Amino acid sequence: MNKSALRWEHLCLADDPFDGDYGGSGNSDGVLSDKMVTNLKGGTCSTCGGPCEPGTRNRVRSEVYDGEFMRFRWCIHCCFGMAVYPLRPSILDRRIGQRNAHDQ
Image (cartoon, one colour):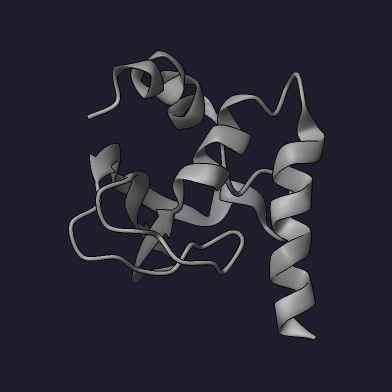
């Protein structure tokens, strides 16, 4: 594990990834788990839509939202963007823009 990554992981976890979304996080019935993990199998990032590469640190969150179980994963690039968002919002905003370009 990259020890330098540990210095900003708590900042990533402090960020509300759904702040400002329609309904906000107020519709959440409860967050079951929200933690940083070392990715073993891969996956798709919930923010940018890019790959979550095996061997990298990812944020994973499980919650019940409007009575439905939901699971989210964020790639290391979006995690870093969440961590530094108060200082450099352009990093995460650019990642969100990548997702929007894929959806069009």
